[in-house]
Image (cartoon, rainbow, N blue to C red):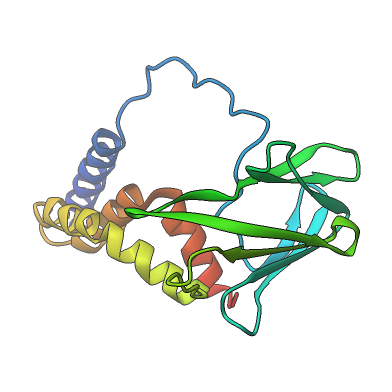
Length: 192
Protein backbone atom coordinates (compact mmCIF):
# COMPACT_ATOMS: atom_id res chain seq x y z
CA UNK A 1 0.00 0.00 0.00
CA UNK A 2 1.39 3.37 -0.97
CA UNK A 3 1.02 5.66 2.06
CA UNK A 4 2.63 8.55 0.19
CA UNK A 5 -0.43 8.68 -2.08
CA UNK A 6 -2.77 8.92 0.94
CA UNK A 7 -0.63 11.57 2.60
CA UNK A 8 -0.70 13.72 -0.54
CA UNK A 9 -4.48 13.28 -0.81
CA UNK A 10 -4.90 14.23 2.84
CA UNK A 11 -2.74 17.34 2.41
CA UNK A 12 -4.71 18.41 -0.66
CA UNK A 13 -7.99 17.89 1.25
CA UNK A 14 -6.69 19.98 4.14
CA UNK A 15 -5.64 22.73 1.73
CA UNK A 16 -9.04 22.63 -0.01
CA UNK A 17 -10.77 22.88 3.35
CA UNK A 18 -8.64 25.87 4.28
CA UNK A 19 -9.42 27.59 0.99
CA UNK A 20 -13.13 26.81 1.31
CA UNK A 21 -13.28 28.07 4.88
CA UNK A 22 -11.54 31.27 3.92
CA UNK A 23 -8.78 33.18 5.57
CA UNK A 24 -9.65 35.36 8.53
CA UNK A 25 -7.77 38.64 8.30
CA UNK A 26 -10.76 40.81 9.12
CA UNK A 27 -11.07 42.93 12.22
CA UNK A 28 -12.96 41.33 15.10
CA UNK A 29 -16.72 41.67 14.89
CA UNK A 30 -18.48 44.14 17.12
CA UNK A 31 -19.72 42.50 20.31
CA UNK A 32 -23.30 41.29 20.17
CA UNK A 33 -25.88 43.49 21.86
CA UNK A 34 -26.78 42.54 25.41
CA UNK A 35 -30.37 41.73 24.47
CA UNK A 36 -30.88 39.17 21.76
CA UNK A 37 -33.93 37.40 20.47
CA UNK A 38 -33.67 33.76 21.50
CA UNK A 39 -34.60 31.42 18.65
CA UNK A 40 -34.10 27.79 17.85
CA UNK A 41 -34.16 26.60 21.45
CA UNK A 42 -35.37 23.13 22.37
CA UNK A 43 -38.83 22.84 24.01
CA UNK A 44 -37.29 22.80 27.48
CA UNK A 45 -34.01 23.77 29.03
CA UNK A 46 -32.14 26.50 30.84
CA UNK A 47 -30.84 29.87 29.62
CA UNK A 48 -28.89 32.22 31.89
CA UNK A 49 -30.33 30.74 35.08
CA UNK A 50 -33.93 30.58 33.85
CA UNK A 51 -35.52 27.15 33.45
CA UNK A 52 -38.17 27.11 30.72
CA UNK A 53 -40.59 24.78 28.99
CA UNK A 54 -42.49 25.57 25.81
CA UNK A 55 -45.57 23.71 24.64
CA UNK A 56 -48.48 24.24 22.33
CA UNK A 57 -51.90 24.65 23.90
CA UNK A 58 -54.51 22.04 23.05
CA UNK A 59 -56.31 24.47 20.74
CA UNK A 60 -53.29 24.51 18.44
CA UNK A 61 -53.37 28.30 18.27
CA UNK A 62 -51.43 29.30 21.39
CA UNK A 63 -47.82 28.73 22.45
CA UNK A 64 -47.41 28.59 26.24
CA UNK A 65 -44.02 29.16 27.89
CA UNK A 66 -43.50 28.58 31.60
CA UNK A 67 -40.38 29.72 33.45
CA UNK A 68 -38.83 29.35 36.87
CA UNK A 69 -36.06 31.67 37.95
CA UNK A 70 -37.31 34.45 35.69
CA UNK A 71 -40.21 36.79 35.03
CA UNK A 72 -41.97 37.85 31.82
CA UNK A 73 -43.05 41.46 31.41
CA UNK A 74 -44.68 43.45 28.63
CA UNK A 75 -42.64 46.50 27.55
CA UNK A 76 -44.08 49.97 28.13
CA UNK A 77 -44.79 50.44 24.43
CA UNK A 78 -46.52 47.05 24.23
CA UNK A 79 -44.41 45.92 21.25
CA UNK A 80 -42.26 43.30 22.97
CA UNK A 81 -42.21 40.81 25.82
CA UNK A 82 -39.07 40.73 27.98
CA UNK A 83 -37.80 37.82 30.06
CA UNK A 84 -35.55 38.75 32.98
CA UNK A 85 -33.73 36.41 35.34
CA UNK A 86 -33.71 36.76 39.14
CA UNK A 87 -30.74 39.13 38.98
CA UNK A 88 -32.79 41.47 36.77
CA UNK A 89 -30.69 40.82 33.65
CA UNK A 90 -32.56 40.66 30.35
CA UNK A 91 -32.41 37.07 29.07
CA UNK A 92 -34.58 37.46 25.97
CA UNK A 93 -36.78 39.99 24.26
CA UNK A 94 -39.50 38.86 21.88
CA UNK A 95 -41.31 41.25 19.54
CA UNK A 96 -45.02 40.54 19.40
CA UNK A 97 -45.40 41.59 15.78
CA UNK A 98 -43.45 40.78 12.67
CA UNK A 99 -43.52 39.14 9.26
CA UNK A 100 -43.85 35.49 8.31
CA UNK A 101 -42.92 35.42 4.65
CA UNK A 102 -45.03 38.18 3.10
CA UNK A 103 -47.71 38.11 5.80
CA UNK A 104 -47.74 40.48 8.77
CA UNK A 105 -48.23 38.60 12.01
CA UNK A 106 -49.36 40.18 15.27
CA UNK A 107 -49.43 38.21 18.50
CA UNK A 108 -51.55 38.65 21.59
CA UNK A 109 -49.42 38.20 24.70
CA UNK A 110 -50.98 37.09 27.99
CA UNK A 111 -48.77 36.96 31.08
CA UNK A 112 -50.08 34.84 33.98
CA UNK A 113 -48.93 33.26 37.25
CA UNK A 114 -47.05 36.32 38.46
CA UNK A 115 -45.02 36.62 35.27
CA UNK A 116 -44.05 32.94 35.21
CA UNK A 117 -46.23 32.00 32.21
CA UNK A 118 -46.46 33.60 28.78
CA UNK A 119 -49.15 32.68 26.25
CA UNK A 120 -48.75 33.92 22.67
CA UNK A 121 -51.67 33.69 20.25
CA UNK A 122 -51.70 34.94 16.65
CA UNK A 123 -54.33 37.64 16.10
CA UNK A 124 -55.18 36.51 12.55
CA UNK A 125 -57.58 33.58 12.27
CA UNK A 126 -55.92 32.17 9.17
CA UNK A 127 -52.59 31.54 10.92
CA UNK A 128 -52.00 28.09 12.31
CA UNK A 129 -49.08 26.95 14.41
CA UNK A 130 -47.10 23.80 13.85
CA UNK A 131 -44.71 22.13 16.26
CA UNK A 132 -41.37 21.44 14.61
CA UNK A 133 -39.47 18.68 16.38
CA UNK A 134 -35.75 17.99 16.18
CA UNK A 135 -36.23 15.60 13.26
CA UNK A 136 -38.05 18.21 11.15
CA UNK A 137 -35.49 20.83 12.15
CA UNK A 138 -32.54 18.58 11.22
CA UNK A 139 -33.95 17.54 7.85
CA UNK A 140 -34.81 21.15 7.04
CA UNK A 141 -31.25 22.29 7.82
CA UNK A 142 -29.85 19.30 5.92
CA UNK A 143 -31.94 20.23 2.89
CA UNK A 144 -30.62 23.81 3.01
CA UNK A 145 -27.02 22.55 3.16
CA UNK A 146 -27.37 19.88 0.45
CA UNK A 147 -25.85 22.03 -2.29
CA UNK A 148 -22.74 22.49 -0.17
CA UNK A 149 -22.51 18.72 0.23
CA UNK A 150 -22.76 18.22 -3.54
CA UNK A 151 -20.08 20.83 -4.23
CA UNK A 152 -17.86 19.29 -1.55
CA UNK A 153 -18.37 15.83 -3.08
CA UNK A 154 -17.42 17.12 -6.53
CA UNK A 155 -14.28 18.73 -5.17
CA UNK A 156 -13.53 15.56 -3.19
CA UNK A 157 -13.98 13.40 -6.31
CA UNK A 158 -10.94 15.08 -7.87
CA UNK A 159 -8.87 13.44 -5.15
CA UNK A 160 -9.02 9.90 -6.59
CA UNK A 161 -12.50 9.20 -5.21
CA UNK A 162 -11.24 8.83 -1.65
CA UNK A 163 -12.06 12.42 -0.85
CA UNK A 164 -15.66 12.15 -2.07
CA UNK A 165 -17.32 11.32 1.29
CA UNK A 166 -15.00 13.64 3.19
CA UNK A 167 -15.58 16.44 0.71
CA UNK A 168 -19.33 15.95 0.97
CA UNK A 169 -19.20 16.06 4.77
CA UNK A 170 -17.01 19.16 4.81
CA UNK A 171 -19.24 20.83 2.21
CA UNK A 172 -22.34 20.08 4.31
CA UNK A 173 -20.75 21.49 7.45
CA UNK A 174 -19.53 24.64 5.72
CA UNK A 175 -22.86 25.29 3.98
CA UNK A 176 -25.03 24.31 6.97
CA UNK A 177 -22.89 25.92 9.62
CA UNK A 178 -23.87 26.03 13.28
CA UNK A 179 -27.64 25.59 12.70
CA UNK A 180 -26.99 22.25 10.97
CA UNK A 181 -24.69 21.13 13.77
CA UNK A 182 -27.18 22.18 16.47
CA UNK A 183 -30.11 20.47 14.75
CA UNK A 184 -28.02 17.33 14.19
CA UNK A 185 -27.05 17.20 17.85
CA UNK A 186 -30.67 17.66 18.88
CA UNK A 187 -31.89 14.96 16.48
CA UNK A 188 -29.22 12.33 17.23
CA UNK A 189 -29.37 12.90 21.00
CA UNK A 190 -33.09 12.08 20.96
CA UNK A 191 -34.52 15.48 21.83
CA UNK A 192 -38.22 15.82 20.94
